[in-house]
Image 1 (cartoon, helix red, strand yellow):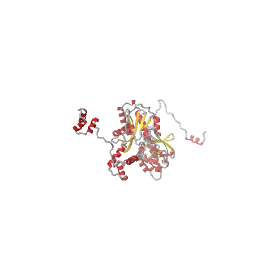
Image 2 (cartoon, rainbow, N blue to C red):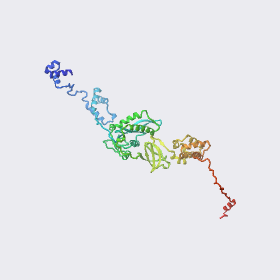
Image 3 (cartoon, rainbow, N blue to C red):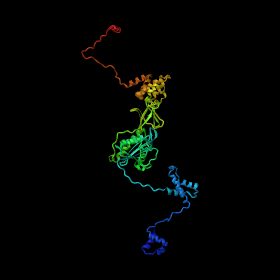
Length: 487
């Protein structure tokens, strides 16, 4: 750079000719001319691309291979090394892999996408699910955390569900809306199958057909759903970042709780504490909160075991409804079964495939007709009865069926009065040597009743009065009456 400046100064300032400057500085005259014409050293410039005698004949084949990759699965496309191997094995390429790698890199280079800076507007939200491992009742399971964020104020809401489905998606919405005390006007989502109908076709454009349950939620709440383009998480970046931040802060270490309800209460307290630190929600333009409880409806028939199957699990109904078509209303944590408008059964929701939930009250009428089945009946085993029930069954078992009927009668008492009360009465009755169900019932009722110590109260006549005298007729009069003597 110093020589460049000295040459230019000698010619342009001191008045030396180009020939004299060339002789004085030992630089070619053509170079002196370039220094004078160009103020800044231009660096090395290539007049034409370098020739690549080994690669030039194979470039069309590399381009064809990469063109085929555009329609191939993403995980089964050619690497640069695989392109070199094919050129060597199939087309007789003699060069090394480095030149092929540079060629593939140059052909695959695309200009980076540019983005527009955006601002968050009031009344808009973003929602998504995130997965985390949680420990519920001593067992580690996968939890699906529904998260909704109001980017304008920074308020967030999170609730964990045992499964990511339409029920938890819509239930999470209503829980978030109650937390926000209103409904956002616009909510941005991914394209999950429980919100968008795909009809077996890839998603294109921005138009979406809403799934039935989510469409009902949007109709009730009057919010406008917006869906990001496939594989475009940047279009809802606020909730994408929040899912990761909340996972690292609230789910580390692995949270432990007795139930999902207990875990969600803990998360709600965290959300309320953060809500107080954010901008007031009054700045958001939210819609009124509707009175609505979402639920997934399905129709199913009770089989001969009085079981209704739903999502790979079975739930019991009263045996009188075997073979009847019933309506199921499912929420993330419960499942109600209705016959017309009458609710005939309610169960805690189960997510383990193949599990059966059988309620003893649904089968007690049938057990009274088939008492021998009580020993191995699934509803009896799932009822969680105290050990005293099994001890009583063994005591009265006689092989004739009489003991089975006694045991079923005691089961009926547990359905009517609760297993705890009946268990206490059983223990006391066994201590007294009583085995009959009627005696056990009397013991239980006696323990429950608060009888007075004396059945007769102290009563006296008023002063100055005598008790009335009762004259009893002779017994002969009754004999004549019986014989018809008196009319």
